[in-house]
Image 1 (cartoon, rainbow, N blue to C red):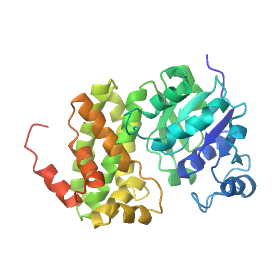
Image 2 (tube, rainbow, N blue to C red):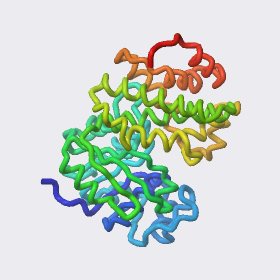
Image 3 (cartoon, one colour):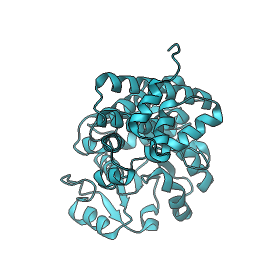
Length: 336
């Protein structure tokens, strides 16, 4: 039986990292938030705010913060990784020697690593050399601003070790944040990755002036892509009908709070990648890079992912969103 999780380090003070640290503190845990910049750590620790990422949100007075990674990691029961997916490996290279050997390692990152095509849990295992049952992933319809405002939501805590998933579940349950457990790590990670790519496509559609029929089509066919890829990689198909699949997909594809949808919207209006980045305040839209790794995984498995491939061509191949729409509509008709 896994021991209760009380002291937790959250590594990364961006929007989602700070929000999840708030959830943990509201759940009564002893939480320390690591921030790369000293001024962010100081604002959190002494003024209970993070104006750069969560303006207007009051953070719990119990939430600690530091810019020193070894200080954050000292003696913790669990470590939460809240950095962009493509930077996780480099950050782990810096941190892993300071992580207590028995700590539960929790990934909030939603992506597949470029080059290696590894899921985030696989990257964690690669660098830290822990067993797979020591790694937990969190996924679901988790728009950070809404959670920070304590609006009700649910999420999935996935780990191959059910008892460990339950321990993290108990560590983060609050009156507004309801976590469920799952043992299908592959499905939860693929759902969290693929939904960002589909959300880019949905944002492009809105930017092009298309309506709800188009969005419903992209969400539904995007879910089919996720399911096909998941089946090829050994995921449980039922995962994609749940919070880490359909739930996360709907929230990310339809909400203006979604970074990926907002980024895609700017591309649909005709912005370049650089202009879209500026318009979304420089925050990371994971799907811009994940589209290439999702397409790479699909090619390796012999699975068709036409929406993800179209997004890849827009983000990395110079194709316009309107040309992408034409290519998707021009595909050979076939049974659903």
